[in-house]
Structure formats: structure tokens, C-alpha cells
Picture 1 (tube, rainbow, N blue to C red):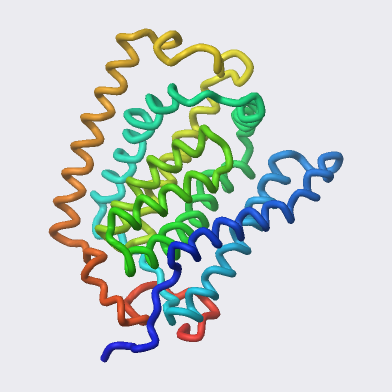
Picture 2 (cartoon, rainbow, N blue to C red):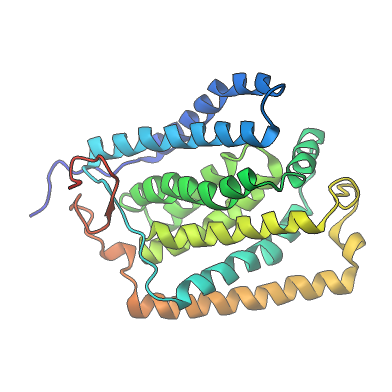
Length: 290
């Protein structure tokens, strides 16, 4: 039986509101910056991030439950091959698409300083935040809530494009905007084909793990030369080999993923939108939780 009171959450306007909630909680965390005398930058970043995304998720999860009645998030990964292909596709997107596009974007002095400082953060706190918590919380907000709702009320291309745009903007700097926009499109396709937040977390985790490991192999002061292009630093031959090779890996990963999805996944379009209790993993404390 269809639920006549069912309304997908969020709409386009409500998705923008989610971005504003992130911005508002971020502003509320500004006082933490004054704790630099007794807290390390990594701890401050950890506390700020968990506060911003943790509170935002709690708010939007509650709004989603109130408007649509939905409290579930699917985390299935189908089989062992899918996570490997997702990880390969994620890193290939970074090398083959994000890196070349990033060459076209002028980087402000403030962003250069932020990237240089972040490149020097390699502690356990940063590992936990960057590689594990960030993928979990961001995917719950942007795919589990935002894209899920948009897909239920808009065409897939529109929903994925808009959610990816907001995901890029949510990083609040020009470099990560490009990464968020492009990777967000890949994440959107994965979510549309699987309806699984878990699959998106794997993609996000692989991208962030690559970025974290890379920090151990560069000198932030000498290797991050924002005044030189990738072709100048790596040479034309090496750069083209990396980009073309990444595209080959990306296309192969997408084709193999499509085959796995066609065989085993439940396409998002087959998830009955009228039912707020479709199978998934409940958030502890929700009304439908045991």
C-alpha cells in the first residue's frame, strides 16, 4: 500500500539549506581557533569537523525522518570484487580527471597556505578523521540523505549534478571544489546504481587514503610548487602516461562495476519511493529501531 503522506527529503531548496546548515555550524566552531595555545591544529580540526558534520547529519536525519518517514541507510557491498573496483575507480578519477582539471584552476594564497599546512599533518588523529570519519559522515549527508531524496523527485542526471555541485561547494575552497564536483559525480553514479552508502564510503575512503599516504612522500615546503604546472614538474611524457593510463583504468573499472551492478545490485529506480521502510540499516535511536 502506498503511503499518501510520503514526501521525499530533501528538495532542491532543502538541499541548499543543508549546505547552509554546514556553513552555520562551521561558523559556530570558529571559537575553537582560539584554542591553538593548548590544542594542536590536528585536534582542533578534528573537533571542528566532527562538530560540523556530526551536528549537520543529526539535524538532516531528523528532518528526513519527519518529512519522509525514512530512517534507513543501505551499506551493502554486493561482493568482494566491488570494493576493489570502486577503490581503483576512485584513484583513477583523481589522476585522470581531477588532476588535469586542477591545472586550469588558479589557486589563491589562502588555499595554498591551507594545503601546505594540511600536507604536514600525518598523525593518528588526522588519519582517523581524514580516512575514516570524513568518508562516513560526508557520504551519509550528501549521498545517504541529499542525493537519496533528490533521486526520488528528479531525473538522475539532475539529482547527481546538483548534489555533486553542492558537495564541491561544501569544501569551501577552489581546489577541493573541483575534487568534490568530479568525485561527487562518480559517487552519484555509484549511489544511483546501488542505493548503497557503504559503496560510496569505499570510493571516498580510497580517495582520502591516497591523499593521506601521499603526505609521507612529499615535502610541503619544496614539493608543493603552485607556480609550476604538472607538465613542468613531471615532464610531458610522464604526465601524459599517468593521465592516459588513469583513463584506461577508470573506463575498465566502470565497465566492470556496471557488470557487477547489472548482475547483483538493486538499481535505485527499483527502490519503491512510496515506502519509507525499505530494507536498510537503521540509525540507532530512530523510532523504527529495535
